[in-house]
Amino acid sequence: MKKLFDYLRFLHVNRERFYQEYSRERELKTLMNAKKITTFFQPILSLGHGATMGFEVLNRPDRSPHFPTTEKFYDYVGSSRAVFGIEQFLRNLSLERYSRQIETSPQFQGKLVFLNIQPQVLADPSYRSGKTLELLDRYGLSPDQIVLELTEKEAVIDYEQFEKIVGHYRRQGFRIAVDDAGTGYNSLKTLGYLKPEFIKIDKSLIRKIEEHPTQQHLVELLLEFALQSETLVIAEGIETISELRFLQNLGVQLGQGYALGHPEQELVEGKLPLSKPIIRKQLS
Figure 1 (cartoon, rainbow, N blue to C red):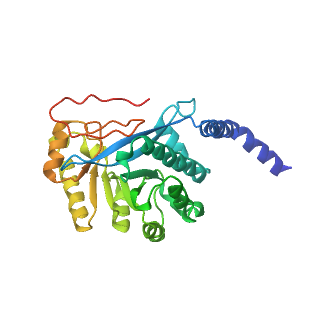
Figure 2 (cartoon, rainbow, N blue to C red; figure 1 turned 90 degrees about the vertical axis):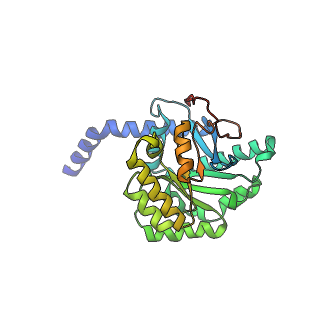
């Protein structure tokens, strides 16, 4: 009897939390079933000659009561029990919509495609069984075009095991990028273990870098590491010409941001600016 009483008290105390979790899961299913996700493509440019090297695929859910912002949506996805299924859905949607763009814009055939992936998802058997390769074949894409961009909503725990998992994808032809580099211990440790093909420097280090020696020093350290490990560096969040010029002088190879190209629902060539002011365009 006491156990039953304790259980009923537990349900009573936690009923609001259970209801909120149920509501979030239902809302998430509604978004996915109706494909209420808008896909954007943001160009990544060579800071040397201005050519568009590839695109990052960005999936933005429609606003809803539980997910009023994209950040809240992905925070929930990262901690959800259904993270593998949700990531699979988003991966499929990204490849489907990218391939549709290639049909109308064949000049972008062969460009790199950056897909955001949460680290724990790579350990999922459905990712490792070859289904991703089947998808690429269906959409006429090659593994060496695909860059798996690792986000750190959930930190890597077992680095040695994760290194082996990443090696599996590399043998298939995929390339690896580590996102938000320079923002914390976990991202730096990830760089040391994985030695990714691309390092994406977080926009917090890029913002007004020409005015802040500490940011400059951190970016220089990342560039030095990249040079030694034969890794390319991508500066994220470039918004002004002064930021761009400073990064070019430092020798950063690639860049991404409003100064170079906004996220668009169609594939659009990025451009190095001359001297025009940068006007930020907010995503809905």
